[in-house]
Amino acid sequence: MSRKVHGVKELWKETRNSSVQHTDIQVETLIETALEEITPMMKENKKISRFNFNKVMAAFNETGVSESDFAGTTGYGYDDTGRDKLEEIYSLVFKSEDAIVRSQIISGTHAISLTLLALLEFDDELIYISGEPYDTLEKVIGTSEEDIGSLKEKGVHYKAIELVDNQFDEMAIMDGISEKTKIIAIQRSRGYSMRKSLTIDEMEAMIKKIKAAHPEIIIFIDNCYGEFVEMKEPIEAGADVIAGSLIKNPGGGLAKMGGYIAGNQDLIERISYRLTVPGIGKEMGASLSVLTDMYQGFFLAPHTVIESLNGAVLTSHLLSKVGLKTDPVPEAKRTDLIQSVSFNTEEEMITFTQMIQKASPVNSQFLPVPSEIPGYENPVIMAAGTFVQGASLELSADGPIRSPYTVFVQGGLVFEHVVYALEKALKEMKEKEMITF
Image (cartoon, rainbow, N blue to C red; front, side, top):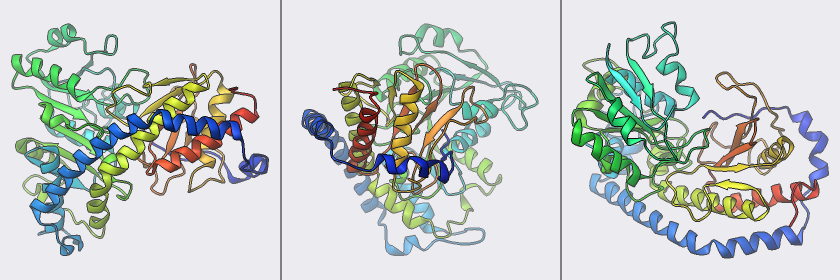
């Protein structure tokens, strides 16, 4: 999902003075009570953080990271030992044979499309078994032969099999596989849909069934928003290749750009030829001055991801206490960072999102307003006052303006920021008599 602030500074100036921070004992008491109530869940999540941090530390130590690895390269990027060592660290942590970690991958969608376009050929079939993927992949898959560079233009067949009651439709999946099926793809996170995100255990059970009957099929997982939320990653569940964005979970809030792809060595080699050129692959690609942020971000990621995850738990618990519908519910097993909140009216949805923007460290003076965005059927409102443009590990909130008026909240590099933003939002909504407690 792309993120940018919509609105102009002057619009916000008209209302900023009417929302000056003030003490509201009821709101503050509600938040303190909620914090006490979710303490056991937060402690359990910290166990995940420690487990994943140990994996990352072991990989850093095993590869022998040194200060000289951060120097970077220019030009062609030959003999970039820091870049190569970072890719080895990703492979060790994600339990894959090989990995590509590059600033030249501009987004999660780019990482996904590199994988699909590299591995699928004419007359192959791609099946998404978690339903239709993100809207941003529509042109990658192709709606017609006129979509330049798409899978459809390339002659690739495609179909999506929807979930049934938030579970894989096993019968439809197994019946849908044909001799042309080359890749089965799973989108771990819900995106802008109301279906639940898919856990590692759920994916592993389905992958085992597919591999038992069709061992030659490549299993691809879109891992965006999911890294370090659980103690296992999709490769450990039987996936052949995964992809994600460095301005989401694995960048730890420090990576300014980039994406990764990890998986079987033969697949990574082929994908690397798509990224650069055949015969060169991973050997080229200058890292310039970005390696320090990528290394340190990955080092911090297990911690920052759980800060965000605990923020999602608080968001769910706190807003459900004031009568709003939240999904996942606070005590649910989580596999990604996305928390949905459904409001009663469009006005409530817009107010909440605007207050998240006002509680941001960057661009808090801007007023987000619903805007038309290519690829979306309805106007979308987005709050994202982030240090890195589009960084979904930083606190942001967005959603299409349509019933049931659902905002998708994600991120929060530090838990305290989520608490601060929720307090601001609740005070504003209470003042406007949108909520009572």
